[in-house]
Length: 161
Ligand SMILES: Cc1cc2nc3c(=O)[nH]c(=O)nc-3n(C[C@H](O)[C@H](O)[C@H](O)COP(=O)(O)O)c2cc1C
Image (cartoon, rainbow, N blue to C red; front, side, top):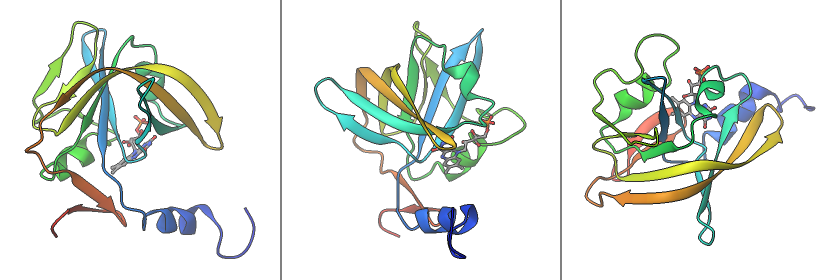
């Protein structure tokens, strides 16, 4: 990085001006729910059905998640600010207080969220201090009555607030 204004802190703040949704990406590994919150989710392709998110190379959770045959992606709803923090916590049970559904294939979904995408890893692309994870979607469930949470400038917001 160069220039006095371009450093990881200023960049993180600048990126924060771009509003995004928040997903939980989760699976059951050896009978234990494993997952993390991510705001870098992006739909990628309709045919084949692909989505992506970026994971930090320092993540201690991703190595446990990545070998699961299926990963559950849940698009968090507007009431999930506490859940988003919990799903990113360094200590404690990330799923405390959350109702989840586990599929036979190992994907874990959070109840009360707007969209569930069952997925499997298609491609991993190294990208700086993150890895772009391309996932193929194998099943979708939509709960259209749940408004999404919006992550903007380090705060959780609602579409109408
Ligand atoms: C709103 C929000 C969005 C996040 N987005 C991402 C993300 O896109 N990618 C990522 O790797 N971590 C993201 N995190 C951090 C992870 O949820 C988690 O805290 C991180 O992976 C550290 O834990 P770990 O070492 O167990 O993986 C986000 C956290 C929050 C609260």
